[in-house]
Amino acid sequence: MAASFQDTASPAAGFRRFFLAPHGRIEDRSNNFTALRIGFALLIVYGHAIMLPMGLPITGAWAIAVDGAVQYALDGFFILSGYMLTASLMRGARLSDFVAARALRIFPGLIAAVLVCWLIIGPMETSLSLPEYFSRAQTWFFPAAMIGQINPQAELPGVFETHAMAAMDAPLWTIRYELACYLGAGLMAAAGLWRRARSVLVLAGVAVLWSVIEAIAPYEGPVDDSLYAAARFGGAFMVGAAFFALRDRIALGAGPVLAFAAAALVLSSTPLAMVAGQIAMAQVCLWLGFARIPGRAGGAVREVEDISYGVYILHWPAGQILMNTFPGLPTPILFAMMAVSAILLGWLMRVGVEKPMLALKPALASRLALFAPRRT
Picture (cartoon, rainbow, N blue to C red):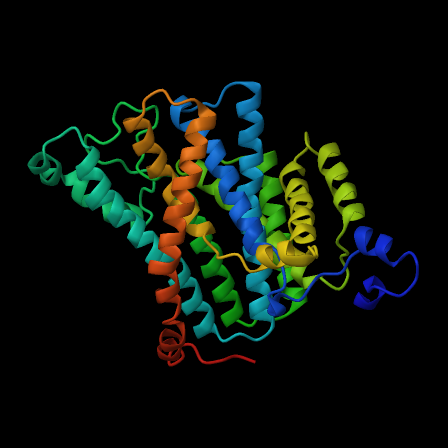
């Protein structure tokens, strides 16, 4: 069925490719997904340039609109993650390779960011003396709270205490849900369920049902925010997984994007709003991700260094320092300074931490293979 979407020599080929394009091949790495993730990260930087001085709740029409776009960007990260990880697992990737790649992708950068906040930014920015700072139990609990995701909104004593939001690195709150998605996918793959399209679609259906139930009758009680976020991000991850499982039956292009966006708008006040928006977002992400940009510009987009993770996890502390150093910065200036700082820090993390750690993947995967043999 995928052949029905392929380009032909007819005069209408370009038109059809624009409105009904096929999915590309992830393994060819000829896509724009890295650039798209960087774009999502920078959109989040802009949203936080508004949020940091304002605090919560977000007020004002423009700020609320930007925050809505930021939420779609967060969903976009999970959609792309679900799509690409499903591509890897359904191609028969060894579980040891999967675990090694995910662990080396998340933890080295996370640990580096937490150590910088704890041992450099904290002592530099605290209003306490250094002996006081290091004598507090809160200071010593901080790395465990952040790296272990016990409290990713943790603060350090005397640090940014006069700011509207004193959290050291608030964006880290989404990492626990990313790790949960990886764990679920790995366990299902170990059971043989993530290797077949039909099983992936059944699991996606369960995730969608959970998000609908959460919309109709939300749980209220302990950890209710966490359960809502799990339903949201788990649903986005599974929408991405389902799009890969159905890649031979789902066309990409302006036509499907417009159709699903219209459906999401129609369903925006119903219990299907969340999943409809995520499906429309998946169409947008994959259409843009596989769009062929010609010439040198296209090559630069496809080959851009993946600094998205570093930008995402380092822009918040950079913004906090900027607000301490230059109080009262207008949002556009704060955003520009945060973006430049985050891009530089993201690049340093990429070349100094992420790439060296990812180079250890074959060795780590070989060790893990003793406990997670290849499944066929």
